[in-house]
Amino acid sequence: MAELKPVTDDSPFADGMRWDDGERSAGKEHLPIREPAVEKHVRVLIENQLEQAMGRVFQVEERSRHLERLFAREPVSEHDVQSLTRSNAELRNQLQQLQSEHRLLLQSTAWRVGRRLRDLAQRHPVFARHARRAAKLAYWTLTLRLWSRIQVRRGARKGIALLAQSPLFDAAWYCRRYAAMLPPGTDPVAHYYWTGAAQGLDPHPLFSSSWYTAALPVEAAINPLVHYITHQGRNPPDPHPLFDTGFYLKQVGKIAPGRTPLEDFLARPPGSAIRPNAVFDPVAYAEEYATSLKDGTNPLAHYAAEGEAGGFWPHPLFDPAWYTARHPAAVEFGALAHYLREKKCAKGVVCSEHMAQLGDSTLSLPFALSFPEERDPEVSIIIPVYGHYYDTWRCLASVMLLTRKVPYEVALLHKWRESGFTA
Image (cartoon, rainbow, N blue to C red; front, side, top):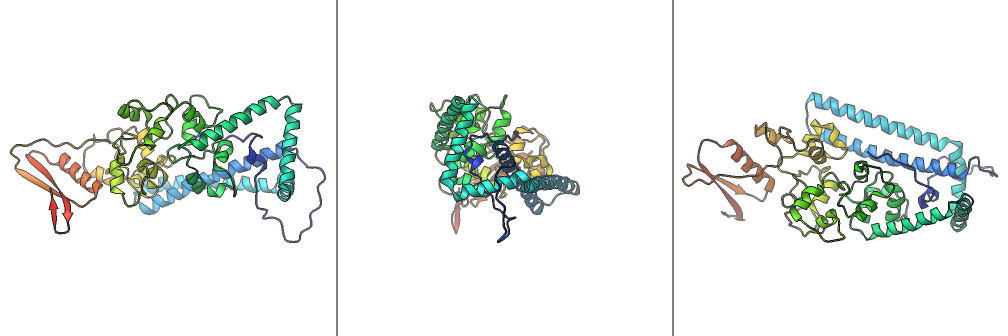
């Protein structure tokens, strides 16, 4: 996980944060404060640290809820229950620590002084905005940093414009996912550029800011999504643990100039057989969960955003809940990501109860279904298909792996009408 850094004083959100004043009682008199007890840059730093703490609270709560869902849905052994309980207890301790830090910040003198200044800014927003700009301009001029600040602002305008035009920033999804962290009227693109990326927020279901930043050989001072787009996704790390750039490019060859591999993948029409990694099959996933996918929704984006949390399987033999119960470390980036990146699809790593029942200790995902051609089979195995792709695939896999020492043929019957089938 990338280290969370405080936002610089250039951020428009550093001075524009709004917090509910739950401590103020009705009708209570407040003495005017003539001189702030702390300097402005100290107050801004406290506000930034508080905002980052709230971001960490949000992430810890999400992981805790995910563990509780897995615990409620999947019956596991006593050892697995104890392991999940310990993980959940650690996350709750982290949450309590962050909440304690949050309370201390709210009770500090610096925060109470800053609260009066924020109240004044809310009552007179135009005056406060001009005052902040004048104060910054004077400070940068006196410290001989004016030109560098102008360059930073120019770079920020270019970066925000680049993100706004990119399909890799899903503004609607960003606002839904982080609604509790966005003040009303906040521009999601500017928020991600200045604040969200430093907090580890993701601009798209298939772009992980924390994963990408942590995978860089040297921590980049630039926004991670801006870095990925400007380098066209060639030399930088993968944008998400579920998207294997090298695996994808081996299938498609060259892509259009000026387009990243992830953008090329997202632009492919529905039904494309090109895979984003070795295990996930977009066609099979879309067919299995056709009623849950909206028209035009990318299957991998759906799985990353809500599919795994909802219990959807990325492969007929991969059960995310079953896998996570036996590998608690998979909670951080997801079960399939853990299998691809940590286990590296190693042989003998069981991913579901169905896979365990096949009884092959050398089995690993993916593997292809193949049947020998028999001119004179002794047995004909007829499998009726009712539109459940995963069930049919598992049935064929069991036939291939468990039927031995007898020549056989397999026939699939697709449902045609209510009264009959067609081969």
